[in-house]
Length: 187
Image (tube, rainbow, N blue to C red):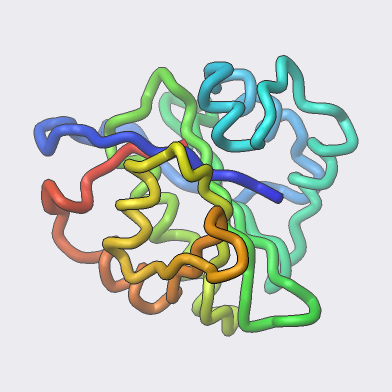
């Protein structure tokens, strides 16, 4: 399963005006690999639940296998370089649920990019009828767990690493004004 990572930041940090967002093109493994290469070993461990030095080609292809309404991914681009990706993948057997994953390269963490990516994912998921995001968040990642819980996530009773986030509540929260309580960096 996919993982998320997050750490607190101060409210003074701003997102660059040259930041733009785009959808990941189907099969675009170059963008997937570029963002992966910008993650530290710690970020890679927290995101993929393994300290990978490289992302296997088969996984790159799976992560780039976007399909509207089923597997959508959005990319943050800064100065013409991909610096973050958010994706959600709908569960075929439970179409109201989708797994959520966010990654932001270490060099630009702490600027609100993860928050903006979360908002884009929530908007596209709601448009596709997704009600819940499921996210595996390592129990040692207290900052991200607190972030998700502050947006209405609940911890799964059978798997404490799994959090369920209501998409409408997440969208309302991330589209609202930034507060110190909700300002975090996520990868």
